Image (tube, rainbow, N blue to C red; front, side):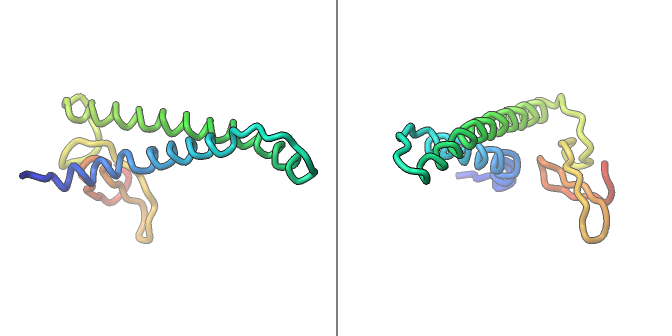
Length: 118
């Protein structure tokens, strides 16, 4: 059995945060979708907060789904050889960061790091 650890790391790096945010938005939508009647002041205040948080959860779900779809598209382009990224090793898309010792770039596909933004 062949397990490609690099591919697993790549998928976690690409899809981990968008999938987590999408699940968080879906849980928020499920939690804030109740239509309980307001019987006292506390439940009336909670009902007004729910009216604000349900669209926010829906927006988070939609934004995370679009981010996930974009990462899928980038991965597909990279696997087909159509992506002209900045990584010297694999040609993948670079993520630009500022660290302790200055600016650096991290490849989203292979995890390679380079000094400066590329």
